[in-house]
Length: 260
Image (spheres, rainbow, N blue to C red):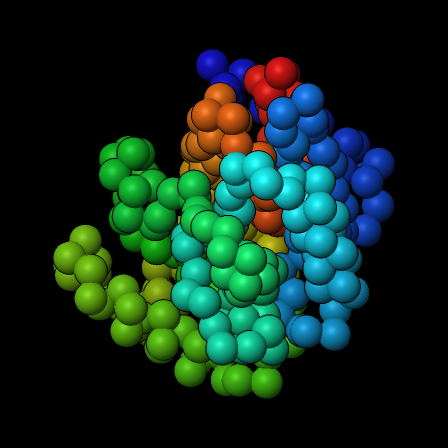
């Protein structure tokens, strides 16, 4: 099973420390194809050094795979091709940026990631409220990391508008006051945007019910991503994968065993 080939999460901190600051990369190749894997930092700042690195890494991939079948895989769902790089980064971080670069070369960019709804269906023992809370905390974490100039309330309300279009959330009140109530019920204290949200949602940490849920759901995502990469590899395609650096660390042992 792919899950057994992933890096155990209890080893994550020690192995992750060997890589240094993100972004970082690794590659697998044979005589016919290559995997280029870019472990990103999810920055929405176009001046972040990762975008120079990603552009150069992409150029090298294009050179190595010229006249070969190739595909780009990104985290968090497929992205719309934006009108310019600044917009692509602001709206979709590295996934938006590489999607735009890929479109310029007529290379398909898609996502093997599991959606919020797919994850909820896979684990019926995890309540929908808990899944929703995890994603809420993820968004709060992104707000903190990117030091957004927008109001947190505006960002969350835009997210709620998207959720309200989906049937599975019809029976949950998708409002900030209600999410704060769920947060207090599950975490055991009031929501505080000054507290590190990453500590709560990190799948490689322990201490809260949300850490536990994040670990289970992120394992499912990593298994699916590795499975899809393996599938394209077996079809003879070269793969350019762009995911958060933590996914690279967890997935690498499995990919190095499966892509032969």
